[in-house]
Image (cartoon, rainbow, N blue to C red; front, side, top):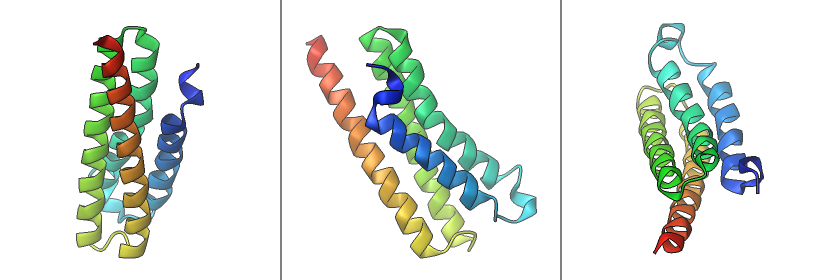
Length: 119
């Protein structure tokens, strides 16, 4: 199976596009601040899923999935900050956070599945 066939990777890719669209409306002074950080964190999620999958070693894959999960937590926090700063409406943030929660659960499930194979 190719990494691009993983539903978690596909959902993470969709999240990247949503984050880019959402941060495009942030104030221009945030271009190198919160907007840039959120975009980097979002891109890191599917990138680390793909990189870990390409390593062909379960330990490396698990490590990269952990990095992807950490980036997801970073993005959740940045989204909550953006709401507090009134850069994102609460209803839009709720949709994004729901997507992030789903990706988080999928990453956790994938890590659990891979861990069980190494035991």
